[in-house]
Image 1 (cartoon, rainbow, N blue to C red):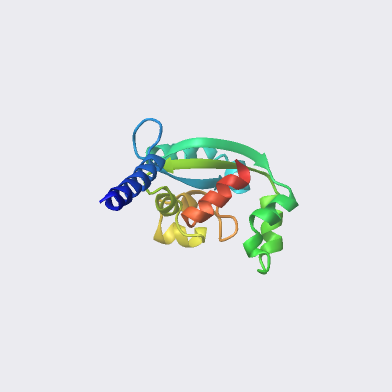
Image 2: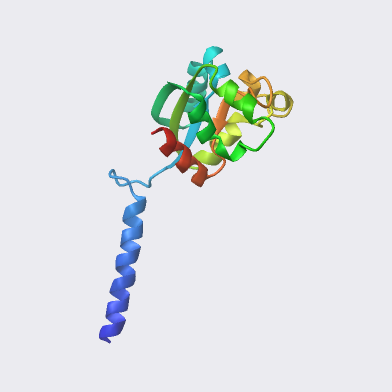
Length: 164
């Protein structure tokens, strides 16, 4: 009997720890976070305020933001998974061409909802297939597509910790 009680207590403690880890200090469920970036063409095109308004109107909260000018080493490190691709040198040049605005966004289903809001990677395609998307609004093509969004929770975590 003691062994059964001990096992029950162990399971209870594990479940309690899991539940506590998912709740914020205010007692509600912790919402998902994602990483968002307004790229140089978005910043230079004066789209930052409009994009932030869209973010807020879509139920996100902006937990942190930082405007920064990237150097080549930082871009190479951030986009390391693309380093062997033919467009990489052009990407580095573009991403160092002006300041960017990086943000941590929060809401339920943040990663998927942000990806949906920004639209397809190719801004020209977005203008046809997703005309209400951010990339349709301010993007030019596949490279100069105005914004970046993490593709997974793991990617969001890595990208948030890269800047914050």
